[in-house]
Length: 149
Image 1 (tube, rainbow, N blue to C red):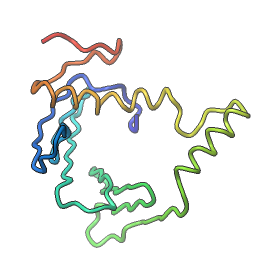
Image 2 (image 1 turned 30 degrees about the horizontal axis):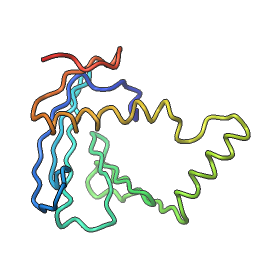
Image 3 (image 1 turned 60 degrees about the vertical axis):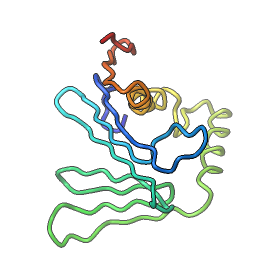
Image 4 (image 1 turned 90 degrees about the horizontal axis):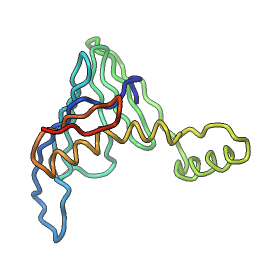
């Protein structure tokens, strides 16, 4: 994970579907809380009226970091501080495929290692389960088990 942590011990999500389309089950607006040892992570997403390019903003005590597929901007917490920005040109999907194929040949770990991906996807999967079942999901990250209520 980004912070070197395991999956959360509790995930709770709630949301609403405003743009009703047949067979749509993903909310347009969602909030999720993830409990980790010593801290809680809050996630919110609003896609109604939110045009692409979309991205994710991380807020912390040292500033905020906005990231999307081809750009990042870090704004330090100090008042009046200039953001540090970087754009990435080109087809990043092709770059990932090229990295994967190069690693098949060299036997090195790819940039998107499957073990890291498996750990990183656990929080959103727990949030989806919480949203669908309308309850908090307790999780044992040590054994990768959903715990009973």
